[in-house]
Length: 303
Length: 319
View (cartoon, helix red, strand yellow):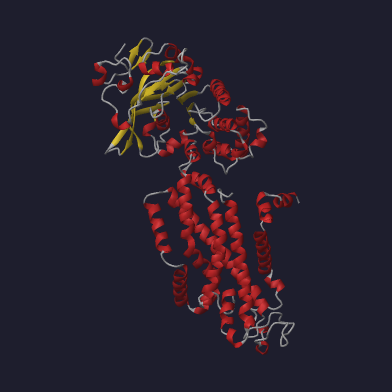
């Protein structure tokens, strides 16, 4: 109880509460994450279970339409899947992939950036050149390449079973240089500070100094990049799925749902594409505006 | 055997095999067990890098160009990095100038004291914690158990310097190198910190090398003084002899520029005119030649060596 009280009254939460846009996005984001977490409990149907799908229910409009049914609140898609359930499950996948990819990016980027900053010279230069080369390609090119190569070499069947961890890995690998650059720059400035010298004077090992003294002092810009990158990773996943290189049709993410709906948009079935798109937009906008708030809050030069 | 014996130590900046500038030129001094030595001189005289070279922590491109540093009979210039690490913070500790920046802002002071103990002593975390509390108590930090969980920003400048002293002393080193430990503090705290350092050195029978430009501080704390100018020691001897009866013209000038010696009528302070020669243009003769009031022709041609004069050592031809 005390912990909750302390948290509620902490400087960060107070600042968040006084910012209308940020607190609204926080509420929306928490709601979406809640939906994503409890998707299996909340959704009326299981979109992955093909035996529950009836082709006769296909292309049904939302419940408030005259042709709609109360069983399918947001209508059904061309195969008779409940749109509400697929959106909830898709949201769940998108959130998992977004967060997972950011974890991969942070682990890779921070470790490599830390090494590059602490060990200038050959190793550091090598790491940063690799980062430069990677940055000269667009994320999508790298993701499309690696996705296509793996699809071609493993076969589509196997690809579908490992699609989620694979997407996390691909999106993670294609975005680490941002973190590496930021962390390296921060480490370079931190390691000249006197507390690092003091740590060397008391006889600590370089690895210990790097890990326990320099790293914690270099992490605040990483936090800001993280929030923005979650949104980016979700969008990358949606884009890849939209192009057919992401999640398979049997486990649709928001991107694959948008892709499916896209084909039926002009034939009048607007709901198949609209609801996943709305969910995606809400998710991205709320993450981004929260990210902006975190960036302003952590900015040492804020007014 | 002396605790620390520095012989003909030279420090240079640049490439060992190529171009380099000599910043410290063949200086020798020694510190006995329990003895306190002050190294005095103006900015750029080479005091601080002398301190760092003892711990073999010269920042690049600095390097030890010659000479030996014997600590308890072992030559520190020949030890490996791993062997050096067991000496740093354990047998020789260092205290820095600015307490506002030498503590890591994101770690509690408890973590920072305990990590030194764990790095050097084979004790459990709980024992290390008790040692940390004792160390804080020794430097008069009130309620150390609670203070252990606080971050550096929750302490004042004087308290932080006391914590740094606690970190330096917690492993019971035999030698402490204090690099201008009171320069960044305000005057009332300065005296307090110096008293504390002196008291702890006496109680723990530790030797101290006090690097400073403040003659007042040095005269209160140390038994020996070495006066450095442009990378060389120009005068060295017992504190009393040097402070009461300076021999070298530079030492005389330094003491004469103290505020107490200001001109009675005009109230103006005395000064040593001119500036110290830069590393790139240290003259062949006496480095103090340009600013010296008693210079002679020989001073320009030949470098005076540190030789016995009355009861001190002095590097000057004019006697």
